[in-house]
Length: 188
Image 1: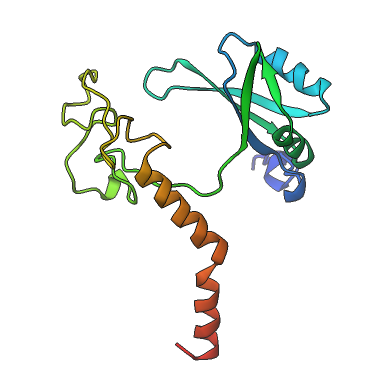
Image 2: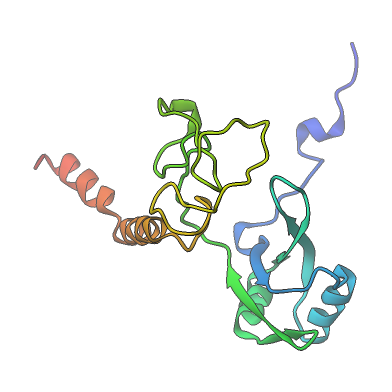
């Protein structure tokens, strides 16, 4: 009979306590020519200890964006969010990772459901047209949700903003706790 690897019994990866886990912070507006090692040293000089930095890329083309995802401990994340970062004479925006997510269908581009459950016809994310996946979009940019001049994936969409605000309000009030308490006490 063969021996099992030591990782089988907990001697492998150790997970830190939840309070010590890394937090994700986004730094927006960092020029694509800026080296990630340079930025790591820049933050370390400001007392912000970073465990990892990744540059986000565009989903369809793979080209780098001006958004960096920085992983650090809670204390460093707070310090990073409170600091003003200027790189190449450009002020960068710093924000925490959002805990509330608005679901968008990759089939019809509408909010609130996923493509696996979608019965609607396929729509382009950028122009709201019905051309196939194999064609590169050449139409004018138009949102499938509000009709604005941005792609359906934009967080500038008024429908997205209202849905996001409604969801964050729902999560902060915890209405399901009240319902559960009423169900247990027999008032339902």
